[in-house]
Amino acid sequence: MGLLKRFGGDRRASVVPLFAISIIPLTGLVGAAVDYTRASAARTAMQSALDSTTLAIAKNATTVMDQDPSGAALSAQAETYFRSVFDRPEVAGLTVNVAYSKTDGSRLVVSGKGTIETTFLRVLGSLGGADFSTLPVSGSSTAVWGNSRLRVALVLDNTGSMASAGKMDALKTASKNLIEQLKNAAQKDGDVYVSVVPFAKDVNVAIAPDTHTASWIDWSDWEAPPAGVTPSATVGPGSSCPFSTRYQGFGCTTGPATGSSNASYIPSSGAYKGYICPSVDNGKTDQTRNGHYYNGCWTSTPSGRAGYWNHTWVVNDHSTWTGCVLDRDQNSDTTNVAPGVGPKFPAQQYSYCNTALMPLSYDWAALKAKVDAMQPAGSTNQTIGLAWGWQSLTRTAPLNAPDLDPTYKYKQVIILLSDGLNTQNRWSGNGSAVSSAVDGRTRLACESFKGADETNELYTIQVNTGGDPTSTLLRDCASNSPGTYDHFFELKTADQIVTTFDEIGTKMSKLRIAE
Image 1 (tube, rainbow, N blue to C red):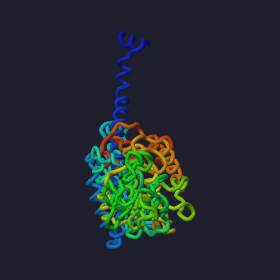
Image 2 (cartoon, rainbow, N blue to C red):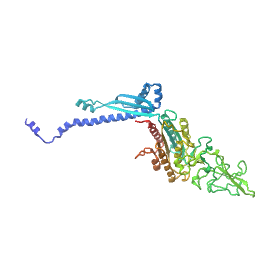
Image 3 (cartoon, rainbow, N blue to C red):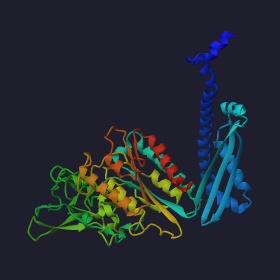
Image 4 (cartoon, rainbow, N blue to C red):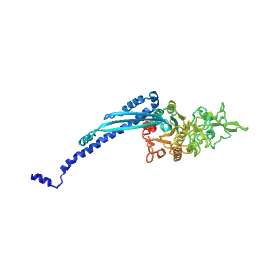
């Protein structure tokens, strides 16, 4: 009795009794955190699965509902797809519901719910007489379509360096996969259009057999003879070629340069007797002319004085043009002004623009075939690639994109991929060293495109397999969200092209996800 009395009157601290009293609520709080964390993870996984399900069944939802207005078939599709991607066996009582409506366009809502059994909360609930044996898990995803459409320009580096490290093969695979994704994002023809714009220093725009007759082509550069050079009056049929690649950057050929062989002498017989035809320029005296063909020849006619000749420059027929174009006059090279309002597009006969672009189309097989035809050659001019990607989205000459239906909303996207840094354009660069002047033109083109319409969106990709510096130009050109570079990708290996295009394709497909 005295011991108990002393215990009751003792005012000194005692840790053990206090700890014993507090251990139950402390354990409950820690356990509750564990239960809520499990439920949160399951809820996140459910939301992702609902988004995927909505995208998967939205494509054919209208057709399925037309065939079965009760909605049973669409609900069955949603249930099957959702359960194939939602791998959370701990979620019990799982149900999936589908709601479809068609007013101004179509709206599809896929929702799901279930419960997850608790471990610690169950004990706390029983102590307090409450039921905390389960926690709810739910989510919802909405797809809206029918009033929005997508137009995408694939602006793809086809320069010589793309031949290394498996980059061109990876680019072809990635591009065709992306085209398939965009095909699957379309409900019907015209919902999604895609263009393919291969670029090097020039872009090939020979989109039809009669493109050379188009009114928007400027033939001045194409028709011009070599600057500052004229054959001597003493040179004629049978004479040695008066030019050399060492001193003039070009020699002579047996006829008009394209498809003709080099010649040490001026032909003395045949169809091209006396023709003095420059060969392709090697850029020795003018680096911007490297790879340039001259599209004409000087003829030689007797002057009336023995051993002397008159020389007249005769231009090749425009039908021999292979489709290459240079940058437009500044500043139209960066602003996309229509020809007629602005200058025309200067033709060039150039060695390195192998594959012609393809304007906006939903001929998915033809788009993939165009990608397969790409060949790497030439130097890098991102400005002209971007300019023609923008042209492909524009409803004026030269490419005349399809008209916009006023009952729809449109998103226009350019995906610009390049493995190098800018090295040459119409005015600057030698094709090997980085050119800040070319960078300046690209920067202006980026800002012009983004500023032309708030719906315009630009993704940029640097395939940096050679250890170059990060392209701050491409990084800053992208349509990045404030404080981020979420539209710029720097890749270190070729295989990342495939995964990056897949990520961008998923983002564009998710433009349909409204909630």
